[in-house]
Length: 233
Image (tube, rainbow, N blue to C red; front, side, top):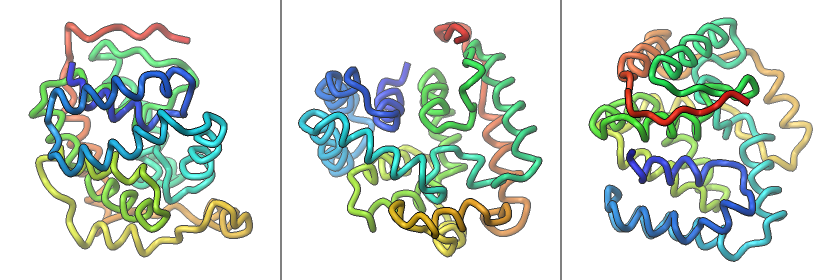
């Protein structure tokens, strides 16, 4: 298992007491594998230190404000590909099927496009294949990193790390298309309501962008016989 991707997955999950306790171990894993450049690991250390020293309730509130209440920071990949269109449902079914073929069983309440879950899957794949897959949503990672940078959030470092691992860097025009979309503050309730009421949009130049992403993500998913089973909830 690729422990760096597993660590990045953990950093993007809802903060719990277990995550706070494991903060030091996560940092040690990143330093031991050294798959990420030293400057990126240093950025991640800031986030890890916040987990280790911060108040758990503050950490949880921050997470909800960023990733649950702000659509432009959604951790659901297909939100940035399909929006609320009908295609999203079929893409979810297909991605879940790919997980199951590889031996990863998810609970009925888990959405397969949730980034921490997606990274957990990639952590079981050969490193080269995982990094190639990461290159497909790299423009999404870049836009999320930039939005988090503007908020002075240490979570930016996780998305910089994903870009560093990807085999292809994000295209400027695709990143710009995402950044042109509304990005309301989580405390502005009226703006948030308006953002969630927007019609679904496709990001990148034309429909081929979303289709290419999904096709490549599916194509990169290979069965992993030694993959640990996750019991259904």
